[in-house]
Amino acid sequence: MPPDDIFRICNMMAMAGWLALLASPFAPKLADRVAALAIPVLLAIAYTGLVLAFWSGTEGGFDTLPNVMRLFTQPEIALAGWIHYLAFDLLIGAWEVRTARAERIPFLAVVPCLALTFLFGPAGYLAFTALRAARIAIPTNPQGVGVAQ
Amino acid sequence: MTTDVLMAQPHFRTSSFTTELFRRHPLFAGAALCLMVLMAPTLVAMALDQRTFLDINVWIKPFKFQVALAIYLATLAWFAGWLPARVAASRLHRIFSMIVVVAIGAETAWTLGAAALGVASHFNNSSPLAIALYASMGVLALVLTSAAPVYGIVILRHRDSRLDPVFRLSVGIGLIATFVLTAAVAGYMSGTGSHFVGGNHSDAGGLAPMGWARDGGDLRVAHFFATHAMHFIPVFGFIASRALPASSGKRAVYAFAALFVGLVGYTFAEALSGRAFPAMLY
Image (cartoon, rainbow over all chains, first blue to last red):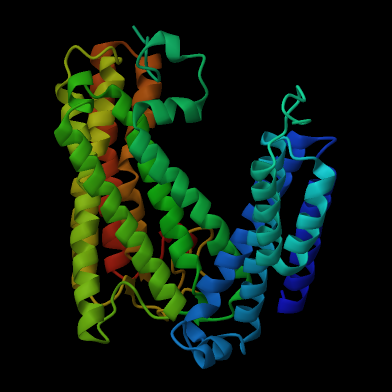
């Protein structure tokens, strides 16, 4: 199978995972199984297979920036790197949804973090962490005690 | 008479095969599961990688090793349920099991690594490192196979076992035969330069699904039967324990074991004389 086809299939799988996360308020358990387990496992299998098959034939390494860039000149390794993003970004997205549910953060507040995580992984993680920090700094007070003081 | 042939205790009859496997030997069952998970990326690599070794895809060999070692571990985990409880729970047994799993892990990594590099694992004399690796993997292979006779002897000596005596005999003999026959066949094989005798020394066009040579002798045939004594003989023993009274059942197990050793000897001699298996086809 040519790398372009694997690229397309993996992109579609990741997209399905993100859609499951968006639908998670309606089916939290199913969304978690799809986005935090099934799809990341499939992506991980594809990634591991690519690395097994093509790593030994690559030039470059992890030690210097030019070496990392040289690694990504080989299509199969660049593809593996891309699948790495897809899998781990999705896992972080699923973790954000789970954490928000456990901490009673409204889902609508999480959606922008999900969008950021989907597009720019670590930026979304940063946004979600900021959201949690804000929630801790401003404690909810269901009784309203002390609010007026 | 034939109670408890497959289950050590009646109340485990309700649990599934996997649950039972993990209850009997969590480490071996877990290691078998890890190998099964590893098969998925190995198959992906096989589908994507065009490189070949001896004219077949480089990933076929590590995949075959994963299948074989997973079956071996799962079988040992199942048989571990018939060890005396105090042996199974002993520290020595736990340490021994860990050594076996480490040896299996090393063999798996070695075959995967050789495939990734597109070089030979066995029979690789191309560099001092390759020779050292091949030699140490031979030692580790002996270590991992030693679990079979250790289990075999302990199960044979476990007189108050609830296992049917005919079946217990077949399990013990099968496990011991696996070690003795495998050590003999594989030991001889490693001393020669190749498992092929005559023929084109190519894996292409081999006998499916194992890939044994069809244009000459292949010592892997004898290795296969030798190693699976621990399956063939207990399967016969299971049937004999159901069909025959204990005394004749035991005699039947001894007779079958002798025949099986003969089969291994026959396939070994057949390969040595450069003939493909099974000879009547060629």
